[in-house]
Image (cartoon, rainbow, N blue to C red; front, side):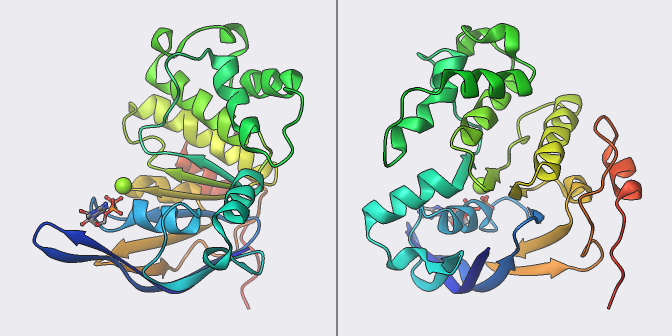
Length: 251
Ligand code: ADP
Ligand code: MG
């Protein structure tokens, strides 16, 4: 689904050039739940931005379903983002002056052919996130976990096949973190491809593939490859999730 080939991204820092990604190559297959772990400053947000068509790499290529996204013009790339990517930003990212329902509807504005506001779909997503009774609440009336759910519902509005999430639980308590992670797990089971970056190693147990970033490089960790989407742990802990994952036969 996504393949990054020899991607380098450098920034001009105050004390010289910072190479956040150093000739990074990897592939994400349709149906993967990839968790990328790495300490702060290792390039996690950068790699997600480059994959998501938001941050132009200094060199290298990113293919999405065979299309080289950085060779497209800005308009085509925006179209592709609207159709294929659901982005959950770091410390996401709801608009304070819009209600829950309005926040969730917002991504429709970026679709190539603006459709009539799909209210029932948006309401369905809000309900899926367990916020059915808060449709007309404003973000300031919501808890951190609830706001994150709104951001996730909004990322799902255009029904993108791919969800990219930047530290989606970074600022949440551990109970809310498990709730949000179980939500990602059920989205994955419903067919979404997910790439999540985090500094929290424990979240690796939710993934079927784990990548580690350090020093601008990315490495796939062995072990969880081949897990199937047969997890039976909607409310379970990550540990249970791991136990219930049925491993595909190894070659
Ligand atoms: P992470 O998300 O893992 O914390 P980032 O991708 O945000 O890491 O950053 C990787 C490196 O690139 C860090 O050293 C950071 O300081 C640097 N960096 C990120 N964005 C910029 C920028 N806009 N300008 C200069 N340096 C940046
Ligand atoms: Mg980051």
